[in-house]
Length: 114
Image 1 (cartoon, rainbow, N blue to C red):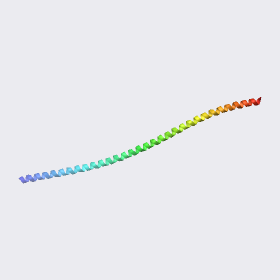
Image 2: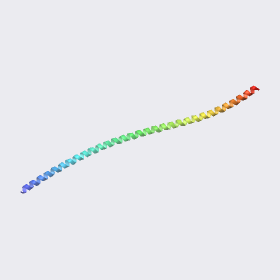
Image 3: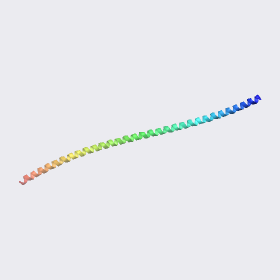
């Protein structure tokens, strides 16, 4: 009778041991799957970060190009304003000279008429 109880206890122990080993294998498989998924997520995150960095660099370059264009445009506008001012000054000077020449011409005609 004692032998039967001992055999029964040994059988229950072996069943328990097999179940424990199966549970350990399942946990190990789950851990490996989770680690693999984490590696995949890390790689995807790294790729996304690289893409975001490239986008940021591209946008910074575009912004710099736009600043350069804006600065160039501002210089061109300033140059045009200077040229317009110079042109207005020259026009005023020419008008003054024309008026002076017209006066002189009138005076010369008056002298010739005498």
